Amino acid sequence: MDRTAVLALFDREMRQGARPDGPGAEVERVGAVARHTGPAHGWNGVLWSALEAADADAAIAEQIAHFAGFGRAFEWKLYGHDLPVDLGQRLVAAGFTPEPVETLMVGEVAGLALDAEPPAGVRIVPVVDRAGADLVADVHERAFDADASGLRRHLRDRLAAEPDAVVAVVALAGDEPVSAARMELAPGTPFAGLWGGGTVRHWRGRGVYRALVAHRARVAADRGYRYLQVDASSQSRPVLERLGFVPLTTTTPYVYATAAAAGGRTPPGA
Image (cartoon, rainbow, N blue to C red; front, side, top):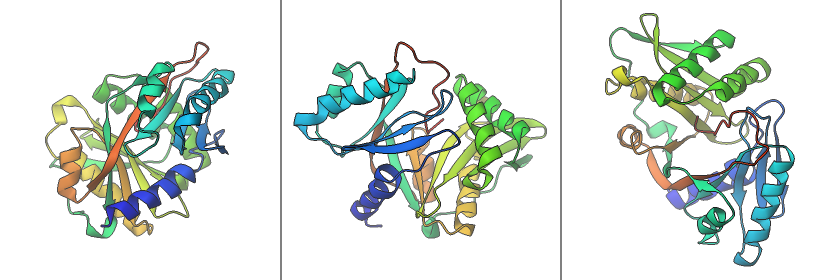
């Protein structure tokens, strides 16, 4: 893989040319910034920027004012190659809080190891309705010890309005949901994104996460996508590397909680 070329393609297709991620969401290009404005329970934030040092602070202030006008907490997704080089420091000075650094990883579907199957006694079930969305949110809350109300509403909305744009799955051990994940599809681009893979504590280390990645990758291959993209944590990166994913750069969520923010923030990786 030509990592420089693929990163440039990712910037162009998935950041600068991003699509709304569900009902009630809008992507707009404002100067040298591309931002995504969604409902209160959805994802709100800056996806891409091409700023100069001279105009960065003004652009940051403009985004704060925009999202504050909607009463939205929001996220600035800062990538390791974004300019100016001190953009992260400027965001912190403006009131943003950085979350843990992740690694942007991309796998070429044709070259991935897709033969991973779930362990004995576990089956992978597609999510197609509200009940399935609730299972995904329930697993998320147990796996990450975090509120998943925003994710629950977002996934319900997406399945109802755009069922062909999201592939969600739950791994069941008997009747117990033990892992869940989703794949966001971007028609017209070569990329599909893997998000939200989480496994409850007592089922970790048994290959369930790996099986969910392989399952979604097979679906992406069937639908003609060339690349899979993941914002990988330090825990998931080794698994993804064994499957054939390669790191391209880092990505850090910088979060701004406006005074009037309402609803639960649902970051893309949730």
